[in-house]
Amino acid sequence: MPKEAVFTLKLEADLRDQFMAEAAATDRPASQLVREFMREFVERQQNAREHDAWFRAEVTRSLDEAKDPTVERISHEEIRRQWRSQRAAFEKRTRRKTK
View 1 (cartoon, rainbow, N blue to C red):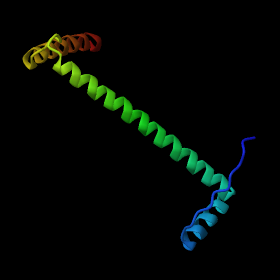
View 2 (cartoon, rainbow, N blue to C red; view 1 turned 60 degrees about the vertical axis):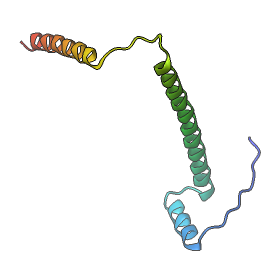
View 3 (cartoon, one colour; view 1 turned 90 degrees about the horizontal axis):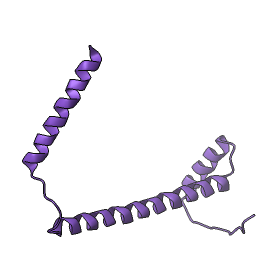
View 4 (cartoon, rainbow, N blue to C red; view 1 turned 90 degrees about the vertical axis):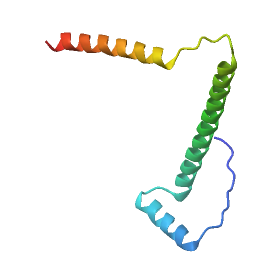
């Protein structure tokens, strides 16, 4: 079993009373709920930090790629032409399946 530590906090009396009443209504000790809340908070923060690092790396990579003169550039018009072609092919396949 991991070592336990005491965690003391100050909060409003009415918040404490409401929390204790809700904990009792769920038949769970307040300490168990606080541990659960703390674990969820830590996990959310770690996930957010990991996502932020990933996102920043993606932005940096994309900006570097945009500055790279060797990267092939595709015009907006060419993308639209390719999209129309793909959409027409998809619609043709879809019509065949529904007949």
